Length: 418
Image 1 (cartoon, rainbow, N blue to C red):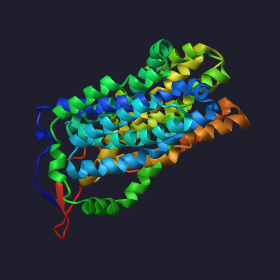
Image 2 (image 1 turned 90 degrees about the vertical axis):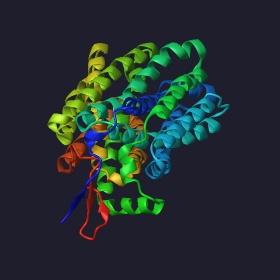
Image 3 (image 1 turned 120 degrees about the vertical axis):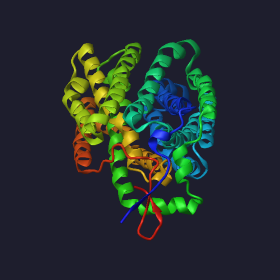
């Protein structure tokens, strides 16, 4: 029999400073995404500058994704052991420094190493930021704030597209990597003003070995979610990273128009992630995600095979409504499925292992392009991904509305998560 232990309830989360905690997660993830997607808009420019093929620059995108689990492991363990705020400030300072150095790279090997190092910082942020944001939110707002948090990703993509249109022509590619310095300083300051997570204080584990033990006890759920997030990464990066290059090379659209299209379809992404995140409070997490995947499947012909700029724009807009609609539910869904004692490490490490295993996405699609053409490469890869995701979510668990403050006792009296 499992006995509930009294503790702070969700409704008792202190109001003072809650907005700073929520804002720090949203601002930081937006900045993190901006710093990653800058490279997407510089593939041709960097290839020319460093005198390498475009595939070498695409490789740096995969290298960044592959290193993200290292950051999730390091910063996630620190956040579960010592609190959310200080590790969050540290990771923002770290990836911002690497971004500045990326803009100072003098050759391709140096740039590649810096993008590997950047991946550690990018991977370290999400788990800590998501736990601080969602632990600071009332349960009834969790879906909406999940969407707002994950909306930072397409917002970062959108801002990178704006920078490609405004900063790149005026100040060159190096300035693109320096544009996030002021937002980074603001994010660190807002995090400094945030209160420490009350849920972390209640569930904190006294040792790193205790954290490892909790992770091992939940290994089956961990493995299922790693598969799920791997497929989610294939969905998002497979529809985003190479799409600007696809528009330029397969449909011969000018770079300036591509930048505007990227801004447009990322507006769709923002609408999707926020609206579906909020809707998931009523429909449930899994059903909301499956419905979003249905949108993705339906618009593939417009997104990949559109014969006019208007059709391609509509397809890209709706595709990102579906893709980021599904992603808008993920922060809440992962945090609700996570053990209380490791709510930074567990979802963050899962997310970034998914990124690692999904990191060949761009390389696979680029290789498929040479065999079946760009349109069919994207269609085949994303079609298979969508089908697999529907099956995985249909068969998976859900704990919408889980109380982040409740503790339980096992028959032996040892604390466990509900």
